[in-house]
Image 1 (cartoon, helix red, strand yellow):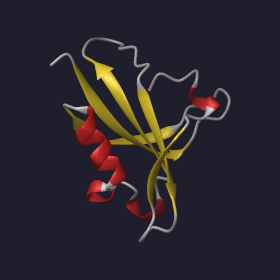
Image 2 (tube, rainbow, N blue to C red):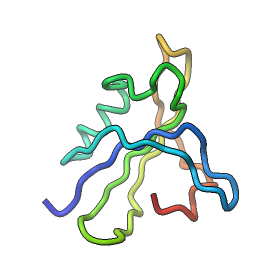
Image 3 (cartoon, one colour):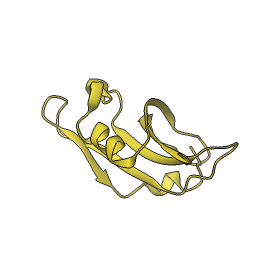
Length: 98
């Protein structure tokens, strides 16, 4: 295995030079499991509204990895019936290698 997939949840997004605040609730060996985790809100990674956005980041092993392959999601709907929907990554992330 030369890479893994991190599931990141955000409680705020980056603004200018200020970095995002985030948590990393899950790691997976393959992208499909990571996508399933986000789309099915596994273990309530949304935490009933605390994390309105999520990202899956393909991460190679090694020091200071460059991670250009990322998939961004935003929560739509209420906390009981809503879900994470894949969206275009906001421009505010372009300078952040999370």
